[in-house]
Amino acid sequence: MSIPLAVWLFFLLENPKFLSASVISLQEKEVMEKNNWDLWYKNDWNILDIYLDEKLDNLDYVTLSILYDPDNVSFDLQDLDAQIDYKIVSNEQWNLVIQFNSFLDEKFDYKNSLLMLKFTWDNPNILVNQATAYLFTWVNKYLSIWSLNQYKQTHDTL
Image (tube, rainbow, N blue to C red; front, top):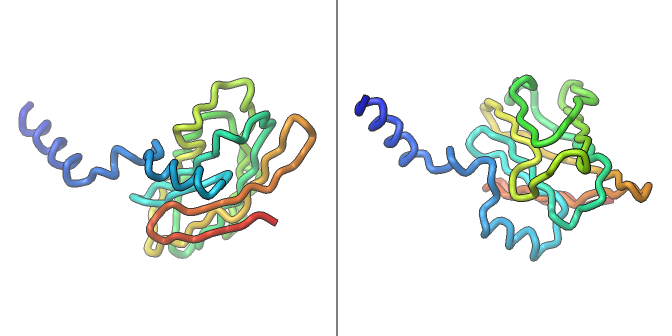
């Protein structure tokens, strides 16, 4: 019993990111709020995490477009972990489109990720390139997107 526990503790100590994949850090949240971003993501530790800013309220649904290189990135959509209901709108080569629904029906926690998708890669070519929020006020809002990981990429709204 003590040997498996020791191995497990050693793994956690050597891989601290393993425990931080689904929650945004305070430092990341401060940077996000300072720069007024609507959506941010990280693709560290073979997990794509996507977060929404708390100022996005009155949401009906959100549609995301995720670009990836199918020669270098693979994932299992059956292993997609989301806080709320979603549907895969399209999964054509190079582009995955997901729609998230029921923001008002379910309690959405902005501190946790909207989506966690585990992936494997030879080269981290995975990018959230477009996001649109559809509000109950019949307004479509293109969201500003930012990557929080070491590959630091910016994507502005239209």
